Image 1: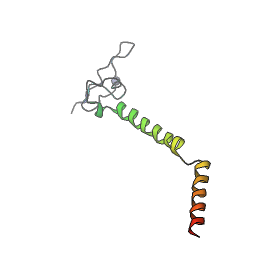
Image 2 (image 1 turned 180 degrees about the vertical axis):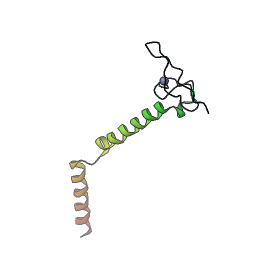
Image 3 (image 1 turned 60 degrees about the vertical axis):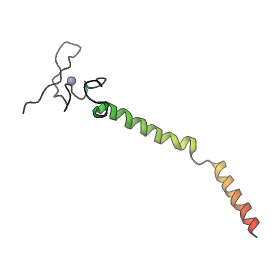
Image 4 (image 1 turned 90 degrees about the horizontal axis):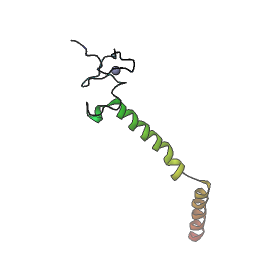
Length: 87
Ligand SMILES: [Zn+2]
């Protein structure tokens, strides 16, 4: 089995010596931006971008929708008033 090399040419004119990825003419570094050669869902760059995006969203959600001291006090107040009504 012969492994194909990456077909990208570096800035200094040399050919890239890294082995190309499966289903691609390019290595993992040169696959960046070459979404036409392989489906985007097989592009590792796409996966990295998507996972970073989800990680960022996941960390930002608690900042906007998380618990605050005011929300906690409101809940405690509501519980206190409902307990008074029951008496
Ligand atoms: Zn390469």
